[in-house]
Length: 446
Ligand code: GLU
Image (cartoon, rainbow, N blue to C red; front, top):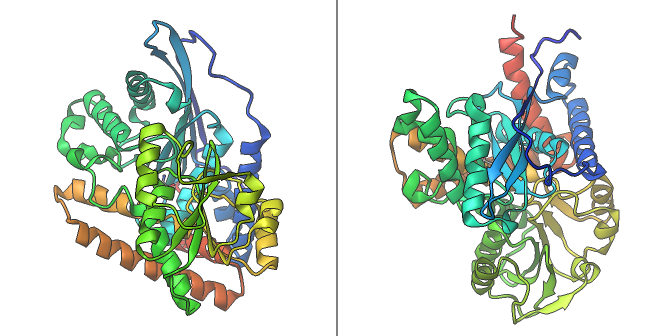
């Protein structure tokens, strides 16, 4: 096919002062991208996606890489590498989070941006897919350094983001406070037009005081619990008295644990980057969240029994909630799991061999693009509120989110039953059909 869609690779390299942050990309992020591309091929086959649309969606439209210097508190200068991948914008502005993590890589961002295109198309919200981040360890930075990194990154991105063009949000290692710094930097550097308050919608997931939405912080978790509740209802199962293992106790993991606990689910195991802990009586999810806020991890939480990774995965429970990073469940972990359902709070936590094994063992999967779509859905509500200068109350946000999640859950279940395919393939297929409608009508410029 002729190259009909511009494929732009912009490398903006600023003064190289210190290259301490660079490390060769490990194969892990390449593998992640290959997994996502493999999923794309499967669902494209299911819906007989025309070749030209398949070709367009097989690569991001824009891959932006920036290297920018930051003045550190010890007086040194450090060079950071940042990414923004704009996968597709046929349905609306590019949309997706920013990840601050030492392992952030180009291929990882490409994979995550592709997942965002699916997620927004599946939820039928008028956004495309994007993702980005900075390769850094936010835990190793002081508050001032973190702010400088965030602001310099925003400055380096310049007009590559914008309220009607590309709208970042929180992801792993970022939060509402950082989104406010992005908004402030953008509004102060985007020229006169950028100072209008409607430009606050350049970013979502902001703090409530600075234009964020009610319910956004727990939205990903709340959406996941809606899906899990629907799944249990289909199985004729009550949540009361059930048990769950939660991997990751950041925004998604902790809020999921707290919401599930309120519904009578006992959280019997929790894991994060520091280790794996069990409590057969069930954790006090709020107290654990306070501990993580104070100490930065689950390490040292008194009411827990420290176990190995294998012991954590093989602990018997009803639900497994991966809410950390990608590529956590391979065939090995899938063989260990003694659960009925894996509900994906993280993006792409299950690897292809893990998925095959779970399927063979009759363990259901609620796929990421459905299960964790509550976050971007409420991001959309935030963006709409900012644009209309409105503030919706929590009830309004929650009612809309519940309706959106349950409707989409049902569409995915129906498609998977009718086409005898996995829930993940069904979710991707529905997303591709949505994108195809628009390509069919708009065609390709010129
Ligand atoms: N980072 C979240 C995700 O992966 C939220 C994205 C957004 O709100 O734009 O879905």
